[in-house]
Length: 327
Image (tube, rainbow, N blue to C red; front, side):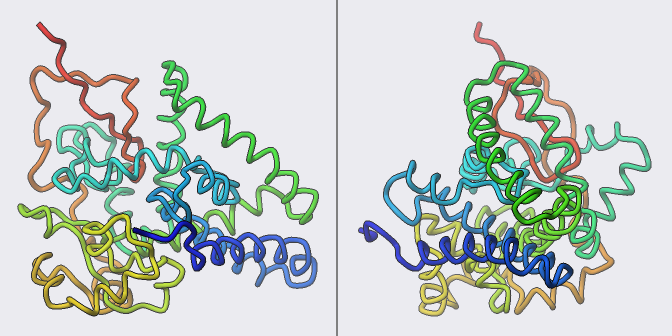
């Protein structure tokens, strides 16, 4: 049984928010450019901590975990929406499905063909590692926000509550940034928030690929100086197989059974993110269109605006097909 309180994670949360406050209140007036870059790192870390909390860390109480990481210093993603979509993503048999996996970057062929040519070009650029780093936040965020607005308008109470909680957090964060730090909100969005999402995109760029075997869909990046920032989610296959294990235990578990982990995921691994960048900085690693699934519209399925699971990684999110009406 895990401990009642995981102190390494609690210490990381405290360090993250303390760094945010010190950088904003103390360092920003003195060293504005380095502070914006450091804030981006802090926001990326907070995103990783949201991921930990969604899996039940650092305490056994979901409410306490939400309280610990829910202050939205990254501005965009409500914790409850992140948690709901991310836990759905952990159904490994549906990984990479353009509709059933909320974190899939693949698109259905028939939907992709309806896009204007310029948008298809943008999505192809977004399939390169450099493109994902530079324009990934701009590609994903507007579609996510639009679909969330549609869900709220459609009357989804859980989504509405999530955004109300998020708004309460923003009522604290936005005045602190604008008046406490003295940083214009547009600048905070343009540099720390955008760059923070770009840093996370380094991790998510190649986390999953299509494979006939579900275990072959999830990567292992063995070593990286970014592993602490990502809370060891570079060992992503280990995390998917043991999703409730705390981040600080993943490296030891991987080392103990390295050959077995690599055999199980079909050796879908890279030695480092630099190796990924070297191979795919300007070349798409994966096609935009899913190579197998969702090639044609499916008879008997309708697309409802009230479904809750959304693809938050593509421009314009993909609704999950609703079940056919019962006879």
